[in-house]
Image 1 (cartoon, one colour):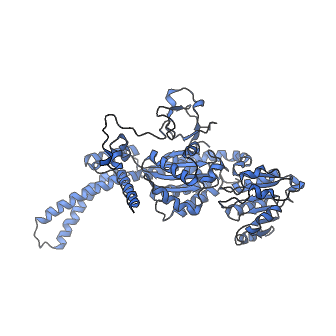
Image 2 (image 1 turned 90 degrees about the vertical axis):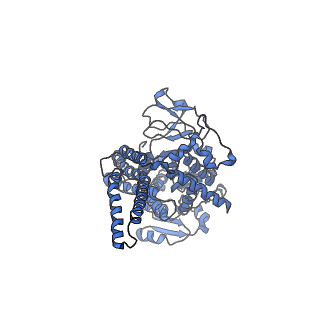
Length: 556
């Protein structure tokens, strides 16, 4: 699973082997000095016990998590009053960020790294995804964004104009929406960059990073990201392309490996957990209540029916959603009750499943304490299985002696046995994912040559237009339009013929044998030969536009 999660591991200085060749230098949110060193054994891909410093280890073995910007030695600091913030930044060694290429990165929190207490605070409802994308893209160094929020993870995917500044801005935004301090978020976050971010999302969509290996619901959730993002400013070419490709990968993995065959879902695992905790004689007689009739609620009802349950009380805001389930499960009595009868219905139930999108608690300690006791035939304790994120059942409810509470983090007990059967299929899936990563990265890399192509075309067009004007000025004023058009077409044809070769050598779409290194070398050569790199860099233009926009908004 380490490969499937982008090699997300925890590092502890206490667990380091002393090997100077495998040191990892980290600046952790400014808490470690630039000389602080953490190290780890080569090829160590497991999870360490210490969760203080979670980082993603890409194929290379070292990188700076939060590089500090220091002034170049001997550089002069101009007066702040005479320079803008952007110009002041460029006078230091930090101006190298204007020469960076944009990066795809993910800042994530999942069931591997963050407890549900953190994840529920970070959870972003689907209806708020477009707003979140808009807020992220107003940050100085964020160009594109997407939000993947499920019961097991919150992951923010962005195209950042600067890696370390992008990480800082996204983390601060997450702290703002969740009220969780940045320092605490840094303990639990996973950071992945470029190819590792791509590989991770492909593994997620394939079900390799799910609590339930191979489950299909996550693919539907990735599809929903694309559906929700359509037409939203900020869900642009790179991020949109990444998620669309992830859907293709998820489908291909399930088709070619059958990894989802016989797999359990979060909903079925919740039902299985309840059956494990109930006394066996009570399996047929236990009074069951399901709160919520959305996707998860419907799946819970279906799995309960498969276990032999013949009567289920469903509490929901409306009864409409139950009609289709009743049609499908005609041998099961499904009784609808409105939310106004929630506590009355809970008092009559032995087992309560909660699976709503409510952001407020449905069951607090005070309310649960008022419920009547459960009979000894059902084990003497009321069972709450809460698979909602944020949780519907308060954490303090578990302090009530007559109650047992379980949430999504408790499902490991059920899915552990199910996991072994599909590990071989997971290995097959990894091979498919690696193949698809190469294809996507080739497409993404091809976008990096677009600025050079545009600048080269603009350069050639300026020369063509100038020479055409010179030529026409030397001819008679009464030159027929047809002849003028013939001369114009000739100039365009010559330019296109001359540019055809260079343009072919900037192609990076995987359809030829040229590698990325050769294409980037060609791009740099063209920049030098035609002095294309003397223009303001694309990234600098974008940063300037961001600063200008923010100043305009601040003034108004």
